[in-house]
Amino acid sequence: MNLDGLRPWAGLVGGTPPDVVVAGIAYDGSAVYRKGAALAPQRIRELSAVMPPVTEEGHLLTGLHVQDIGDLDPGPDIESGWMTPMQRLAAVPAESFLTVLGGDHCTAISTLSAQMRRHPGLFVLWVDAHPDLCDFSRGGRWTCGCALRRALEASGIEPSRIVIAGGRDYDPEELDFIAKNGVLLVSAVEIARDLPAAAGKIAERLARHKVHVSFDIDALDPAYAPGTEIPSAGGLSSRQALELLRGATERSRLVGFDVVEVSPPFDHGDITTLAALKLIFEVWGMVKSAREAGAYEMRGKR
Ligand SMILES: [Mn+2]
Image (tube, rainbow, N blue to C red):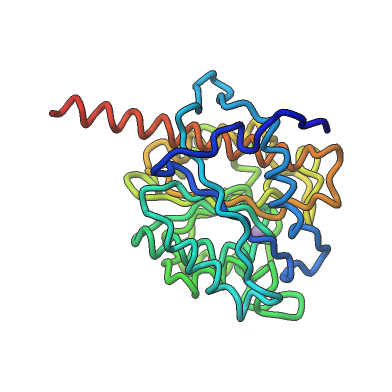
């Protein structure tokens, strides 16, 4: 792809204070099926140059100050290394919208722990084909099937503040944990049958709370996102994912987004990386619109 003359992040980098802070965690040591997600932050950054600073509904992102702080290194093992990226992310001012580029889903252990420090009482929308709630999976407790379970323990986020959307592959142990701990699970089939109702159900749970979205690209159907560690049939279209994100978060305050499990070596023509970028830019559009509406409301009240 010829990117001559184009600037990363649609040319939005610069300006203070930053409205958006981007960081990468180029780690895939917890991927037990096939590795490759460590290459995602670099590829996402490169291709961010092709994105226009405009949302799909024509809202300009110009004026959004983006700061990219580069990659944060947890070392070879997330179990011993998750604190290092966490501390850097936790130091990002709370007013900046955090955007993290994984890495496998265990990078969310660092991301969610940092977000909980920046925003106590945080709710999480975990968009994923898998709940990642195993206590032990594929030979370890820090493998990708345990990502959310370890993230809950590390961050202190209560399970009842988690919504899982897009689920379709489960271990019996995970369904047990979901039922016992008050996690809301909205499956891919529920979304496919009635998207507005599914989004409304999630919006109700998240209403009036600060929300971080952790988006495993395998929530999308492999037709839309083939470049991932574990493709799972029966997933969301990119269109459904965008509609779901918009509807599910419209009554909450978005404070962060991480996109994980993009695996460039298994991608075809970069469509998975470009799907991840579309999600990022549309979420930024939602954040910008909400801020402008909030600022307008505050001006109105004066
Ligand atoms: Mn996952």
